[in-house]
Image 1 (cartoon, one colour):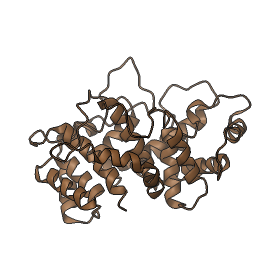
Image 2 (tube, rainbow, N blue to C red):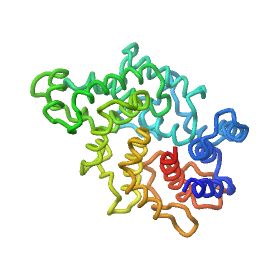
Image 3 (tube, rainbow, N blue to C red):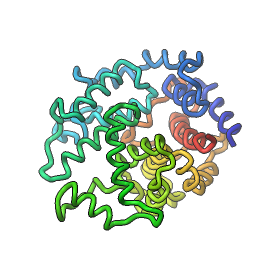
Length: 327
């Protein structure tokens, strides 16, 4: 299959999809080192890419994009939160060494360490102090998984996971006990539930550093068993019965997060990936329809590329997932 994946990726590259798509294909599918001349040249062209420059033009002096997690519904902003900008940065192929991304990482570190105030309105519940650290680290982990605050938060959540999961699987009583200790008796932990997308992102980082940890397989089996998959995304991880742009975006997003567990994920995701491979169109690409601007993964293709943008952008996401199964 890998040879076919490479061929599909080369087909897209031959049609000049623009620097963001090229960087992601070269880095994620061909897995070229940052020193490779082909990747270096594509990365250099990111600096003049209009979509990259549009995003960076909205960055504030402190490295953020304003509020971090919750948007201000009274003000229109193209990038309503720093979380939104982080997702867009990842989709545009910018690395942690980029000046703007480095500044963002510094901002997130200071925010996490409580050196500067969190920009969102405070929630009046015991979850908030734990939640904001989770939001910060779980978001910036997409860009810099080795950042000290990310490693620290990943260790925190892996400690909880090791108490909640055993060879026999998930224990609700154990999770209730852990969060009761953290937050106080009879507190509803809601978005701190271990299947949340932020927690999954952080747990995956810890799993990469500790691949033999006993909680990993039962944690993933539990996530795959849930009817609504990962928290905040809310779709099952099994092959979709409903194929719509919104559903497929959330479904792929869920697998993109869990794919960071690498081989542990590949085994459980095998039926879903087989289904995904069979969804190629006559050109050998993937196209689940046009989105309506709600997802940062789209609108990155050069306007002169002859391949429809939706085909390029869906295919980028699918190819990355399929490539992980080959490692």
